[in-house]
Image (cartoon, rainbow, N blue to C red; front, side, top):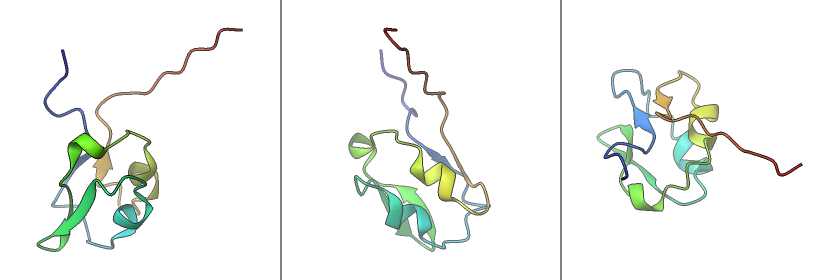
Amino acid sequence: MVEENWFPQIEKELCTGCGDCIVICPTDALEQVSGVAVVTKPAACNYCGECETICPVEAIALPYQIVLESDL
């Protein structure tokens, strides 16, 4: 079962509309709408975390932690 809001969550009150997350998104899942970043194509998001990392005001959060396991 897939959660409804698994994609990056953007706090519109914090977003300054700088566009850094939109530029860095490798799948074009984000767009600027009314001056703030919005996940307009959640199905395209590959959950890479680049948007969260680059946001200068920490307006983007990934609701799930990514855990990688190794076969070592």
